[in-house]
Amino acid sequence: MKILVLAGDHIGPEITPATVAVLEAADRRFGLGLEFAFMEVGLVALAREGTTLPGSVVEAARAADGVVLGPCANASYPPREEGGINVPGELRRLLDLYANVRPCRSRPFLADARPGMDLVFVRENTEGFYPDRNMHLGAGEFMPTPEVALSMRKITAAGSRRIARAACEIARRRRGRVTAVTKRAPLPLSDGLFWSEVNKAAAEFPEVVVDEVIVDALAALLYRDPARFDVLVATNMFGDILGNAAAEMSGGLGLAPGLNAGDRHAAANAAHGSAPDIAGQDKANPTALILSAAMLLDWLGGRHGRADLAAAARAVERSVDGALADPGNRTPDLGGRLGTRAFGEAVAARIGGA
Image (cartoon, rainbow, N blue to C red; front, side, top):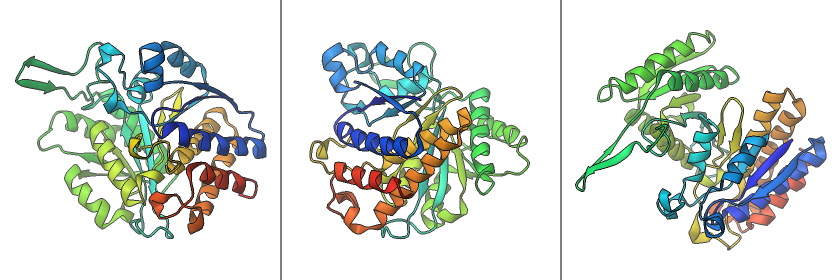
């Protein structure tokens, strides 16, 4: 099982080794046969090769069974024509990683978490309002005059249907409810098409109940009554914004895992950014990337019919919860004093008994 590891920028080279240490512990316990390859993306690659995403990395990602991708400083990159490619966005497009899956679960021992939150955002990843990935050639954002900027929103029936199916597949293994996030009044054509395709896909899953909540109401309900939601399916921008908000309400972005998955490829990529303000200080919380890697193991287990990979994923999750339950094991963002590397070691040490 070949895993390509891309550390990314700023805190990426700190949280990624902590994540690999946990995966190595899982590999030793469960005999998974994991093989790691390491390559550079982001600012380091830009300085060395003139691009943040070298073609060799893309080919390695295609050949790998899975990818672990650290956070990337996309906002710091130069224009695309100068080598500044949005690394996670481009990999999602090139590998057709159409589903961004973000679980958000509150833990009772973390005081800042909203009680009762246990939900999953399933966000469409390849179209919507994100112009760097919603066109075959060129970009969906342009300026016809110096004082006018236009951005295109692309919603397709096929894209909407497959993300809805992905949400229903997750819901059938959970509590059996999917909530579609829309804004059909001002967006009757694009969100109307999305909602129509959600319903068509849901018809294939009679055990799943589907409802619809408009995006602004959902923002309030996530805070007021998070327990009412199970799986939420959304277009790209709505899912991105609300997924981050829910992650913060579940205890903080440092706890927010994410998996970008398609039919043949998947990449573990935490929801948070590269946090340049704490880079190099051994303060970053690696939990989100560790849990993202656990999601990758689970996805690989399902794809290859391997129960050992799924069992390893559950062991990683239990070990993270066990470590976080001890205030002495928490990183500074959660009020603790443990460093990035030490937290990874604490989780890895627990996997043997998880």
